[in-house]
Length: 458
Ligand code: GAP
Image (cartoon, rainbow, N blue to C red; front, side):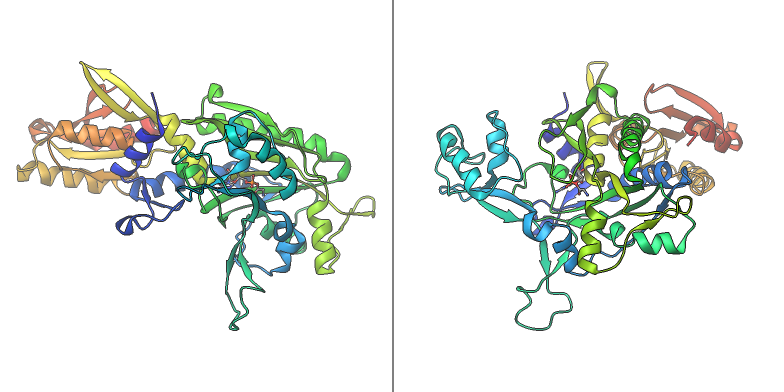
């Protein structure tokens, strides 16, 4: 069975995900992507970009900056309302989100609730809640804690904390404030979308869920601008597309489900999450939201710029409504690691193999000499490696014995392992082992590239 411990351990052991600042004891809720992690996340980002930008005429890309005018975060409502309710354990000083602890005992709260309202519910249920770290029941009162991360960028006064520039809390604000630039500089017409992948930062209170909730993370967001009358029709289309995207990505249907938001923010028309069955249970992977005209209306009000759209057919002006798809790269990596993790019993031994879909596998081909201390085998293996490395993500591996190499490559999820042996020197062929079936085939080296292209086919 896949557990958090198994995923975290494999991710570190095999060079996917490292805790940040590891040699300094780590840095809470921040992670680094190792050599295989970065290949995996790049493949995920490439797949998302292809699905939403390359394959659609009506969606264009963007890469906006992390730092933006501070007024943007006032207009968006983040300065006033982007907060989570925090309590602190008086015994061990662990901070927790009281809404999550209440959810754990079946009590739903609402993010619009005031500090006073949260505290009323909290005090009624205090004796049922335990600190997740030490188990004590002695907490401070709840207070709302703003999640925006401040910087002192461009502010050379001692007053910087009072007029902060924020690190963006979500990437989509960069899309909203560039909507007019895109409209004026390209040939898009409503309905159209803008997609971007980029870093976001949040001062998350809890730091216990691996890649699920981190303080620095990447988002893949697509904002689709529509006529007000078409909002719900386009929303349903987007929901369908996003569901299919996850099936195409390789997540199993039984590990996905829709979660309809019970409490909508005042401007929203509809909001659903796509939840994934993480090792700790089903939770949000992506949000699909119908946001009305809130975003462009707010930026019109705060910037003083007219962000309405002049319909070329009717000659009428309106503020476009927005539907969005928003997902974290880290959460997707976590879901893909969970989905791929497989334990198999082979001849009474346990094999751990990461069964990544071909398009996501961080390494496609590994080449080994049967014995590392035979120069003629190593020479031939290096020739094969040279032949393949420009066509495939390819690795030369001569560490340990062949069994250990298979074990390592299985845990990385390498699709094909190629072994050069003494026969290869005579017959100019080698053994190809398939990751999933473990079947071995002899293939001529001069046919190898075509053979692998057909097998890998991405
Ligand atoms: N623009 C809408 C927005 O940002 P959100 O529900 O706050 O909505 C969207 O975030 C997605 O971003 C989430 O579904 C999740 O995949 C990812 N995400 C949000 N906060 C995250 C965090 N602290 N760590 C990792 N991913 C996060």
